[in-house]
Image (cartoon, rainbow, N blue to C red):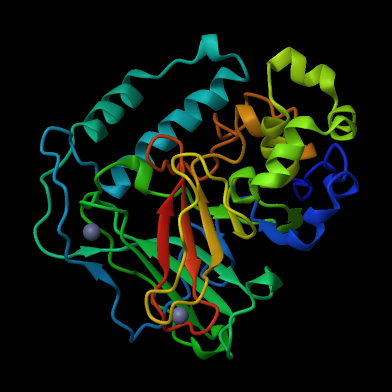
Length: 348
Ligand SMILES: [Zn+2]
Ligand SMILES: [Zn+2]
């Protein structure tokens, strides 16, 4: 990456047509993860954490939803498979048709796919994200904490994925744990984030249409000024409604991010109230299955618009290789009153 990813400007400022949206503007920080070699001192996805050597590593006791029919790979099996794919893609030099594996790679790949015995006992959590306040000032944790760490259990649970959210003061970690425990196997490669460095970028978001009052949504469907402003030709081509255009291009950014609004899709908006004090919770971290998709192409950073297929990552829109429930996002919410209050998790 030679320059930081930059989101193109929105097609137009939606508040010029709907001034009532202006007070609802929120800052989101797109993290723009890109594969790299983060150190424990870096902000990262899937990277080593700045973890005190004398602090116990978190584990999950389940219960887990075992799927004995699907082989469970070890983290190193997944890393090997990804490395083999990267090497083959690099050799193919941008032409998917000439993608070939060597016999040795094929044998290694098959061995890595064979799976391993399911584990007994508590499962060590995997690092998901580490964000320094210095890189994302909008984190704004109360108190002296300046480092957010998120881990998760790499197995399915009866309900939502099990995540751990920790805050600490980076300067207080002087003796760093160098070899954290790792699960012997993980349920799926989807749970192992590819180590990525971050290029945070602040953007402005407006609520997803499902979070807007009925009257505003009604105006969106009928306001002529708005329809002219929002390029009606494009709508006709793709048979999009004005609300679709608002949701895809003008409101909520896709991808991994801190803060901002939630892109609803699986369900209607869900109340996000703190289980400890009842406060309205803030969006903390969005863990995304992809950085952009069919309905959010306008958010593709300038620098990624002509990523060649010879890139080391064959899927430029999936730099972290994480998949949440078939292409959805995992949203983590935090209580603004106290870091001690439990966080909330939703899939959308
Ligand atoms: Zn678990
Ligand atoms: Zn609370």
